[in-house]
Image (cartoon, rainbow, N blue to C red; front, side, top):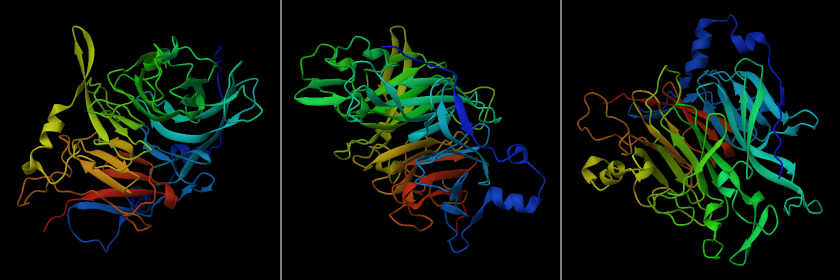
Length: 444
């Protein structure tokens, strides 16, 4: 089956050189826009407070169900919604828009069904989305009457967005760029029957992308749970649910079999909804050479025992090993350590997005669309943040918040979370806005 990669032609509507590179203005006004204003009615206590105004406008007008948000190393805000990719500055002012991605000789396609957006240390932007293609002899399911037309998950890698000269430098396609599939036999390309069920590659989704310190990339793929009881010898090499590793140039490295695609456990990838590494903005000359990660699981059938897993990646003489993070697991057994833990059983209902504070705090954020809530954890996996000076206890202070609604500390089906410079950004999908929150550490 042929795979075609071309240099992309992208539609990018910039708002002018001044908007991209900065312009003169009132310093006081700019500071207010950059920092935001907190709600004056909120009490003086430890917790996250909203920064107003929230961002409701993109490059084309009102945001339409924002799906994810990311603050890049270039200090630009990337927001994806049903319209495409909006590029904003940190004050919420539109800088550009990406609505179509094409290649020479073919009509551009809309940037659609976006699941995630991130940026690596080269300032390349990754977008998990979907794209149509034609697969000779395939039996696809999305377009009746056009069996060879397939709607497949892709991950785009785009350079030059920071400078306004975007280029598509790579596309990672499901299933063509998954080396674990090369030995799998299908009765018909794109479709196979196992255990009495018919599965289509169109049922898969790329749900998360997480660059590492050296720009290698972790990608999570979600879809119908793989049937390992069918007797097919290569069935376990081609799960829809998968944790995949790629080089900085997008070349397939491995499907991590240590993470079970079928049975939830302390090492599994069952309907993975996101992946997070411990690397993030701001830009530095070096980062710790850690390949550890967190992975979220959100099966449609309901929550699993541990919805978010912390996985240690250890290099041994026998190769790379993926191990349970026993430190975070064991601390959850100590009630004196805190009032909540990452490894509480059934703590999360539908965790959909993860973020890491790559600063001295080292906090981890878990966004739960099922509970319409944002959970905050310390480096050790205890729920909360460090207590402020003068606090009567050294236990982390719980600051998780949420609840269903349109209030400043409420969400409706939120789908994306990001962190930068003491500020948490939430793609509040159902409320069509990007919420902004900052930790208040006043204590009385």
